[in-house]
Image (cartoon, rainbow, N blue to C red; front, side):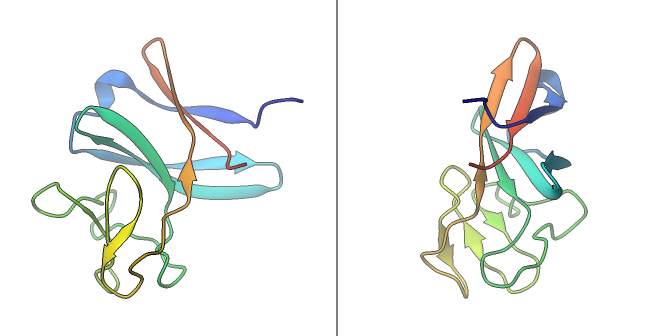
Amino acid sequence: MASPPRQRVAALDDLAPGTSRKFTLTCGAATLEGFLINYRGTHYAYVNECQHLPMTMDWVENRFFDAAGAYLLCSTHGATYEPDTGLCVAGPCVGEVLRALPVFVEGDGIWVGCPA
C-alpha cells in the first residue's frame, strides 16, 4: 500500500521554538490549509480549522500561539488548544481535538503528510 502524499513545508532553520508557519497541502482532489508549529523543539501540524466553527484559527496572519506561547488560540471565539495534542482545554469546544497532520523531519526539511 502506498503512503499518503506529503510535501516539504519548511526548513528546520526556518521554524524556531514558539513559531508557526501556514501552508497548503494537496491531498488527492482536496486542498487543505494547515499550520506547522515548533513547540518546545518538537514540530506538530494541524488543519487550520477550529473545532468550534469551521473557521481558520490564526488571530494575526500566521500567528497561532497565545501571548505566553503556551497554547494555540483561535481568533474567533477564543478556543484554546494544547500545542502538543491539539486538545481544546478552554472555550466553546472543550474536549474536541484539532485534526493532526503527520510530520516528518528529513535532513534539513520538515515535511507534512495528508491525513489518513
